[in-house]
Amino acid sequence: MANSSVFRQRRNLFLSHLGSYAAIIPAAELVTHHADCEYPFRQNSDFWYLTGFDEPNAVALFLPHKPNGEKYVLFVLPKDSAAEVWTGFRWGTKGVLDNFDADISHPLNELPNLLPHYLEGAEGIAFRVGKHSHLEPLVLKTWSEHLQKLPRSGFSPLSMIAPCPILHDMRLRKDDFEIERMRIASKISAEAHELVREFARPGMNERDLQAQIEKYFLEKGTRGPAYGSIVASGDNACVLHYTANNATIRSGDLVLIDAGCSLDDYYNGDITRTFPINGKFSGEQKALYEITLIAQKAAIKCVRSGNNAENVHMTALQHLVEGLVDIGLLVGNVDSIIEQEAYSHLYMHRTGHWLGLDVHDVGAYRLGDYHLNLEPGMILTVEPGIYISDRLPVPKGQPQIDERWKGIGIRIEDDVLVTSDSVEVLSKNASKNLIDLEN
Image: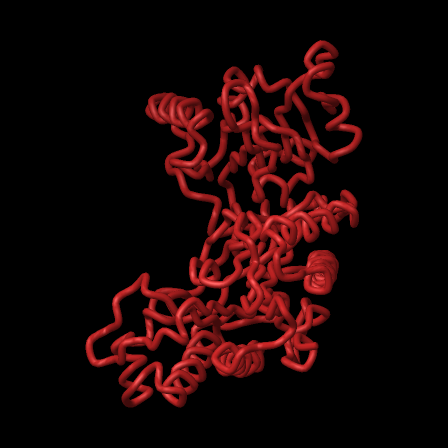
């Protein structure tokens, strides 16, 4: 877990980027699962990134137009022993001052009365409209009232912007602390994949494997899975977001497991491995696996400073299509197949995404017409795949699929850090070479 100096540095940088705009960043709310039961709480990543405060229904104000000692204000739920009997410990206003480095703290119920005061003197407001329905009416009402005072006072917040471009650009480039946390998340995730592959046997249920991998996450002190674990055997692996995880694994099946842990400070791993349940690939499985692995390794080599995520994707795609043409699942000129997307019934997703506090992490991939160059500190997944089923129609001019290929789904995914002079595969401890997967 980061110490307070990490969050303080982030806040100072954020404040410096705000100019004279006042930013309002809400915490997450509790979400009802059913009746009066709620989902386990998960903090809003932007709020966490700036505060390190892990309670719901808080609001943080960042006020660069105010003097030192008044720039960072937290509104939080007050101490309430009766409520804490039911829902657990709260820091309260004093605890926030003593432990979370806030300049000023208030009970949450004072926000409506105090927000106009804190916005006074700001040139504008940084608040994400459309995402925080519980808070948005108050923010818009306060802004409107300030605008109505403009003819008399001559000064009020005139405009509203989203804070996301600033915050998400910061979050895209990981500092040394974040990189180390991501190494740990990827390491634990990789260890779990190794454990479950050794454990897996024909006749088990997919859920048996899910239980083992998530048990390991919890034993290592993480929050648990970073997302709904995918344990897909046989044809189920051709469903990209399969989460039923309730089928019996048959001898001869491949098993695709897409799972990663989330640390106590929300940094995530995201790894996919595909292996034969009985320790031996069939000829068709082996051919497709080798194509996918070659494509993935070539794409990982492209993860370097100055390149971009589009080139990483296109490198993987080029190798996938070449391999599929070689074995007859596609026909024609490779470049034409790519241009016409005549491969999309076999490979229908991008090759990767940013990774960090969110599994599909924030940050731009393009700046207008230009792809964003990779820089040291960026972390992305590299995850090509091949999925062969009857779910999508075969494009015109491409061959119908022979039955012997159907029901094979393969994806290989690693977490990759861009460094100044090379590439670091954070998830390298999860085996993926054929020699390691067969016994």
